[in-house]
Amino acid sequence: MSGPVRTCVGCRRKAPKTALLRLVAGPDGGVLVDHSQTAPGRGAYAHPDCVAQAMRKRVLERALRVSLAAQYHVPATN
Ligand SMILES: [Zn+2]
Image 1 (cartoon, protein in one colour):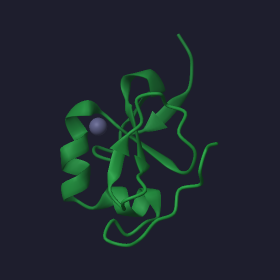
Image 2 (cartoon, protein in one colour):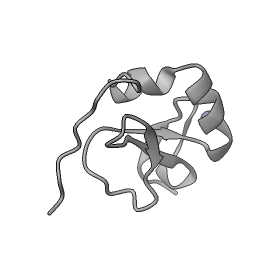
Image 3 (spheres, helix red, strand yellow):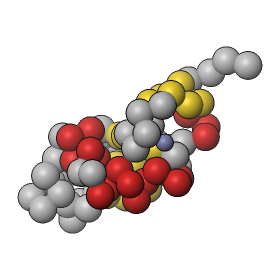
């Protein structure tokens, strides 16, 4: 089996992309789970069990290069 592999931002282990959730910076400065895996912009990947840990450690902010408290503009898709 081969396919896209991404590093989980929570545990830093590599895993198949399909086993990870894609996380993107949302328009309100928060983090959204990109269920479609196709939202524009920078994404980060984490195991479902690692998402909360990643948020606590603020690694998501670094991975997404946003300050979650700051305004963040997501380009409109239409
Ligand atoms: Zn993980």
